[in-house]
Image 1 (cartoon, helix red, strand yellow):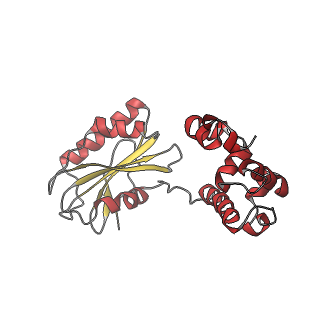
Image 2: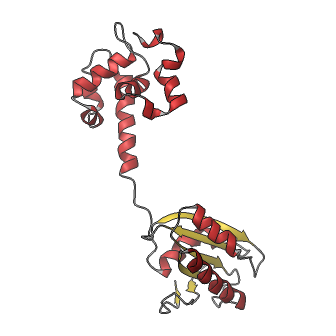
Length: 229
């Protein structure tokens, strides 16, 4: 039975929209890329012929557009569309690795784009997986020229809801000073305690200015990193 003779609800496009791509066979998914068939073969039949021509779906995925043109009914537009789709998948799979936080300087570098050049204090949280790969960078607060709130509960909630296992925070000092205030020290201590309570790893709290950064010492940190560029 041809696709156009099927009840609307049974056609590949409608089934994908209602039940998801997992409900479709390989030839049906490929048919959606092809768009339409040719005289004597609908899109699903043409997709099956294309897979058979290449040997299997894996080989089709590795084929260039010129190889696909050998199948009757597959013109340049269809061949280019299929080749482009599989190439996009390869790009997604081979994309650059996520940045990792293994030092205070890397934490400062990840936070700096959110902080440098801003006339008000801001606080940023960097959420990481168990190996330190960055999952999320989030601007938490923005305050005045010399202070911004540090909502401990909201920071921890952000880390947990982002699927994080570790996190660090950073804030800027528009004045250019790298000296932590009493409030900065207290916030760092509270974050360290809160992280331990819920089973998270607190990486660091750093101050970032337009030209430098400095780590604020805390109980679970190695105190060997003073200031950096």
